[in-house]
Length: 282
Image (tube, rainbow, N blue to C red):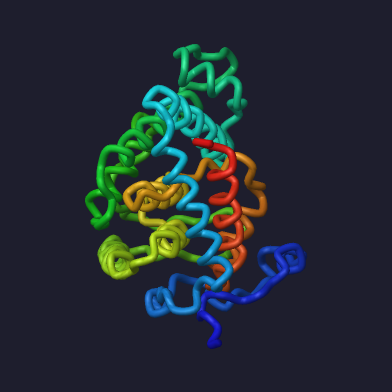
């Protein structure tokens, strides 16, 4: 079987033994060849396809048999876990229990900044947005609306950025021009809308939106919630990321930026799907 152009076996720890300025990335700056590689063929193995189908069937069966009250509580629990972990990935210091107190009882714990508190609250609003809005067909507008919800009141400009950005831990350079960022988003949404398999579509959305870095801040948060939006719109279980190793997640993104190798990120996301189905709505 022909190897998928984005999948390469690699050792993350070995790759990151070299310091950032000594890694000599294959793709030191954004390269639109990425869009040619967004194909479904050979991206999932037969075993992975069977497991995803089995897990999805289990999730759909579970939510069908839960009472409305229990189902609501399970979504609330997942939202708390997602808000905590996604914010933690961005340096937020709220604990899981503090996040639960904030989102469930509106208790603001002392010692946290307004920015940290707002970031948590924004995640809850963003999940409500993707839960009630159909993301079956993606547009730049609904991605921007999702970003706007996630960075509300965080001193982040809305819309496509107009200046260059740098990324900690890599020499990879995203696009600078607002015009070319817009074009890249147009191409991405068109490519994603032609992909039939929801899990593949979600993985590509999470990775490539992060790769483009279209906004001045909040890109990875938007990508994670966009992935969940795609899963929910196709009746797949959303991800909480609760037990993901955030360093491995960041390393997986960086190796994707530098080498256009999505294998480590794919493995992490599939593991999170397994975790979500086994730990919520059951």
